[in-house]
Image (cartoon, rainbow, N blue to C red; front, side):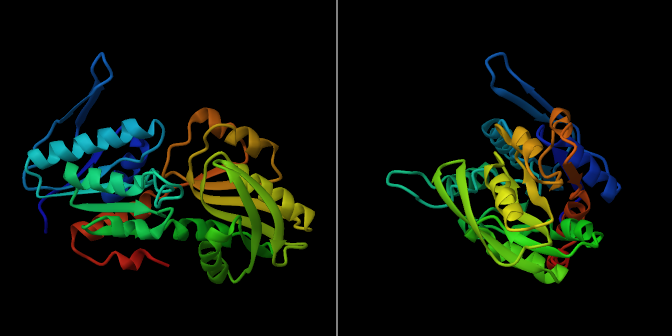
Length: 312
């Protein structure tokens, strides 16, 4: 054992942290989170954590840089308060899309964030559906990249449609294939050409979607440009219904307007990121909870049990 279990929440997604505590039968450790008049973050852990096994729950939703800095300060405070082990539970790991140099003189931002969190005092990272799995190699400490698949699969299995799982681009084929295998469904790919960041143009479909329910599977929905164009192409190829399914509801910029106007009958996401009430007015959006999976992961890490039992 690594001392008493303590769970602390940052300001990004406290409802998720509360739900995790409900599953574990514990309460959040009190923490003062405030800002000084010039915008600097003021933070103080308001309970004794010496010798404890502490888990800090913080998603890096907008404002991304503020929440990363708040997480770093919490890790530093816990390290200086002599916590025995500090695990950062980051359901959505920001900057993960910048995992390599795509042009001259560009940063590898995902690596910089990894160094920042490690220096701040993190001993272990728990995250869900990393945009690129190889980011785990940016850390010289244990990383548990768990999957939201059990939650999403359970929801999809209740549908009696003849489904085909669709990857909206070539990069997501492995993810779509894994879901298709577990649902005993077909697999299709939308050929996509991207000209500028956050702008994509879908071209044609590889695979059979005619008269089937097409489930467009992705790890995140940001501006929703990719998946809404994919939906239109799938309908043009004869799909009878189109559903969007993604782990991380970033939903930035014109995302909600695009989803409202899209061909999707349902948009399934999880609560790795909080979805504000004004965005939930979009009746197509259905939010599933990953609190149970994260609670099991935290329990297994705390008790030194296997985390791989959570994989499907």
